[in-house]
Image (spheres, rainbow, N blue to C red):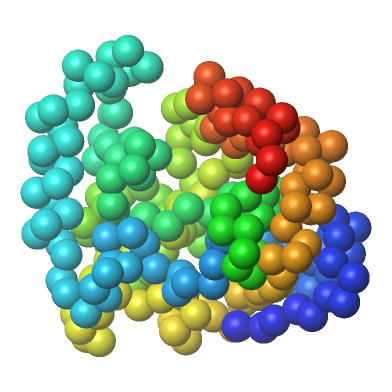
Length: 237
């Protein structure tokens, strides 16, 4: 993984640094992930224990979701059409899965790096990927793949649309006996960059981003986002 040092951190300087790096991979799409702290690039299901095989537990949790969620899903949209859409739905509403959120939108990802943990440095990751390398979800289910893969979800809600969502999928690696974070994956880490977002810069960057329309309203795409944005705008942080 390559760190991009930027002395005067601003929206403009980040955009220029990304553009320079993108010139190295002109035939690749770049996707982004913002984190309020630099924890490993692992999905929620593996963060507390990356050595354990979670496959059975994940299937059990997904089955429980399918049993309990339909009455609630009917209030917000149609039922997921397949296991990929179920697991993406689960990720969206906070269940721990083998998915890690990414976005094709740079500024939304920077927002995630800034919005929480104001006393801690955040980090913005970028990963270069050929569009032809995305997973064909029509041929394999979420528990059929081997090795870390990336996918583009079907747009089933406003949040996926607003964030230009992408996901990395992290199955348990039986050869290494652990879940492999992207920064430890030799097939992937050379095409991953990171930009440190100092705690002292977070509030200024959030102000710049709000001026571009990147805020709770866009990111959450629902009434709770509107209310959180009003809190952020009018109350001390």
